[in-house]
Image 1 (cartoon, rainbow, N blue to C red):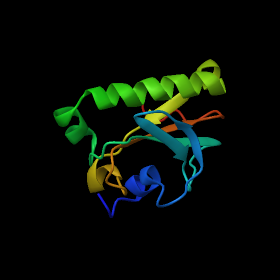
Image 2: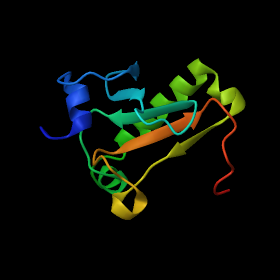
Image 3: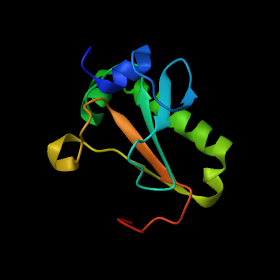
Image 4: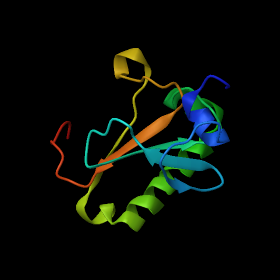
Length: 114
């Protein structure tokens, strides 16, 4: 996916502020943070959205969620709490079409949906 911004982060073509990386997952700071801590987690294999990733390789979701669990525990966010968000499509607010999950925390968040 030569035009995908997140794929360019994975390949090293573009730099980003990485906070976590393993064999399958990359995590980096959101450039427009919606909370004190706002990190994006992506799989290194490109898929466009949560439906595609689930239909093609559900194991990638496990890779991402395991990485989020590891990182949030390292950062102590598991003690105070955090939110995970995934957007799908235009109506869902997705602007980058590489499956990604937002982890927000580091402060008390508005309740939103319960």
